[in-house]
Image 1 (cartoon, rainbow, N blue to C red):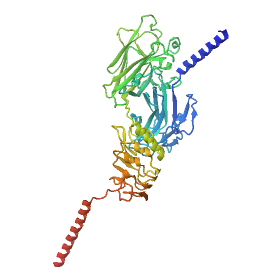
Image 2: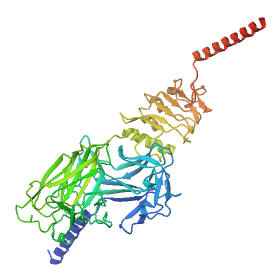
Image 3: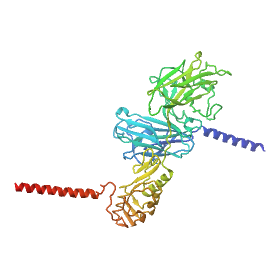
Image 4: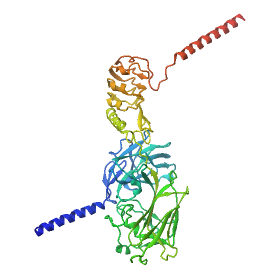
Length: 556
């Protein structure tokens, strides 16, 4: 092979390798949605693009804050005044990928452009409670962030839904999706009978100097996780170290996993590693923010960055025990890399407090312990309930026919669309309640694919054309209300003379039942013959009593 061709091939291989390594260092997905924004924009500070939410939801009203000194993505918001059961965002995801989902809420500091208080609502993704939000007084007008970690498995989209509470209107300022490396947070990747997802409790950077803004995110964390400073008065005044200069001589993982960086490695950013708490023992407590689960995932980040501690010699190890409540694990560290030390499932005992402790296995250790970072999540079983696929496909066609595409999310879960009743045990649709919905056009044939339907209400609309014969094939149908439309033709024989099937108010219809005085949904049911007879008898008796009374008075 000529030398120049050989050199060219080596160059191509090198560039391919560089591209592979560089791509591995990037977020697998990086979706940032500014809810209520009127146009997309580049974030000058963070260096990535924010897009509007127009492609992700079809309901709500957008508004911009006035006179607010805020990050740009909090200037605007979308709020939902319509009293639907839920308002949903449809977010595309890649199959078999672990994601961080983040939602930020800020109701404004007051004034005409702010959200009126009080307000409360719930947020779900798919069929799982994400968070409950409540703001009552002006002291609650603060920026709040919620984060969850989940694995997509075979899903190609997720539904983020806001469910109105008893007061106010739900709102949302921003939505962010961050793809995470395959090795990280593996507790979410178990595809067993009960897959799990997590809701962030806290993500802490130990050792930053008190004062100043030591919060950080992207680009210091390539996966844009929010890191909060663990400083007094919220945490104890442990001794701290900052070894930014010494760090240059250490071997830290980048984005090409080395030996020991397999499943369970959460890729702590270098900014978390360069400082730390140190002491003979590091014990602290954290108030619980959620009480709807007693399961916790915790991850300790430890890197021996103290120059005076000699662990570089062969066979020299530090033995740490790290614990949350009664769950503990011991680990030996024999080099200066950054370690992820996870506790995949902690069962909390205290209903109010989380107890955390890092200590040496041997009480004779003179070096003390070190903790660079710590994060914990509340752990939940992933409710995978979803509407039966055939029913969902039939509804897609019905929505297209009737112009109902602004109803998004799963039709039945976690709550049904307002015009549906579902059997949540079987994940099937039982009732269509589309009375007074200003519907027009023909009745779609694919309604008959909803084979578990027991009741159909399409009355008081402007439906046209003939009644599909296929409706007669629905085996469980007990009520069919088609009153007061513009339907024409003959009522299919299989639908005639059936109790609970009403067709009045359609002058163009013919066939048995087309002119019957039938009950329209919402009206009073017709009185039975027995009731009418009783009432006639009552009137006759009352008349006789009055006649007798008058007769006796005249006689006297």
